[in-house]
Image (cartoon, rainbow, N blue to C red; front, side):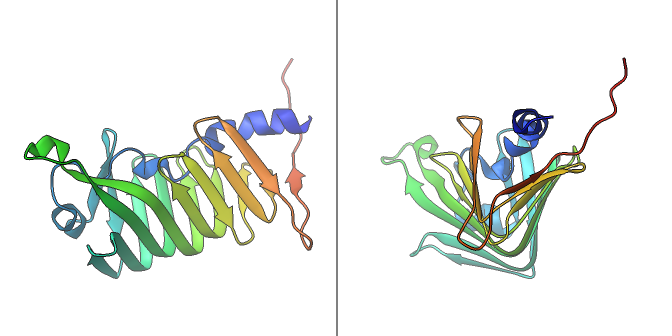
Length: 186
């Protein structure tokens, strides 16, 4: 089986990691109100974030979750040591529907592990999700695994809008893909 078939087999997994925070995180309530409850919404699915501590810095536009962070949605669980959610105010005027916050980027650091309900797993030391571009970049020995198949390199970038991914090697680390044969019934 060629690399294209391998990519096809893990395409579903690669298309959605860390999208648990896709769309607006905060719409009409304040950041403190929602995040103190440690529940956010992604589309129609709620996301529950648990951590040992939570810090909100409205001047810098960041919410910092620290210590055994777990962000859980119905179809995904993300674990890391620290999670930084960078946001900015949106909307002007007196209409409360136009006000709120939008996510700029989300940074997960320290032993990042993303488990999907379909069995797919991604690991890295750091994962950065850029909201507007719908791009996820995995750094620090990144690996994406589905069953026995996996791909690893120095940097793995997932362009989610484009349903495309790029795995880069470095001077000390080549790209490596392992594709296991599957038994075919005829």
